[in-house]
Image 1: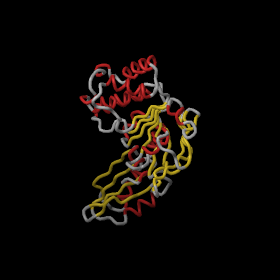
Image 2: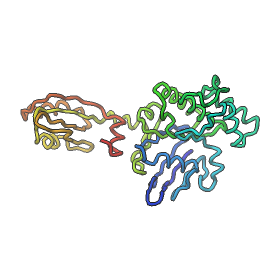
Image 3: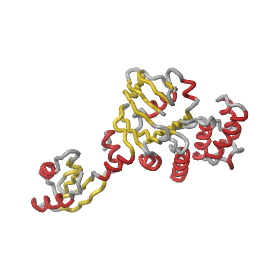
Image 4: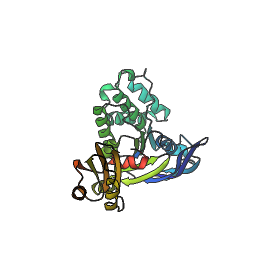
Length: 310
């Protein structure tokens, strides 16, 4: 349904998106993850035809964004991070205005408004000024405006930005409902949002794709890796080297988090539950353990390791 082919976008000497490719099947809901400035919004704007790529192309429903832009845009509903709303208009008037701008005839417009309003639960607010609505309901109005022409693809740029926890939960439920009929790609840097709503995650960093995996596969990766935090009493300078000789397999690592005269804190990443080995090694070397705990690898750990976070 959506295919990005070697998408690249430059602004002067800056490469904002660097040779990104991926495919999204009909009915999938995919999270586009990355830190601020990673290139998420630029990627989405190329998918919608708002930006021309410097290289590459995007294929939506079998049609090229470059060669068939208007046709492709009829298949897309795009919600930017800050929805473009006219605050002095009533919700009803705004939706009619957007529908007319999209060229919908009266019958299609009325049907589109009724379905969009029902989908976003805006019935009570239909005749109210947009200016008096909460941030969450303004987002709903923006989303309703993207649904008027019944697009098969929704592209949502940080749809929960600025919402409170209750509003975030409501928006996530709404997106899950819409995913029953639509192919959805949404960008976010809120990791819990991806786990709550998406089937797949694509992570980009510095304009490059660094991960493309289903949430099921990520869950298997999380189950198979553990972080072990161990705190030794005093400054134990040889601890990292000794543990590194033990945990030296693929995807295993030993890092000194901090070390001073009072304590040495290590983080050990291992594919096995290795607390017993950590403990027995400390006993053999007569180190005193003051803390020892294990945590499973999280999506946040994966995100940080792939995007340079600490």
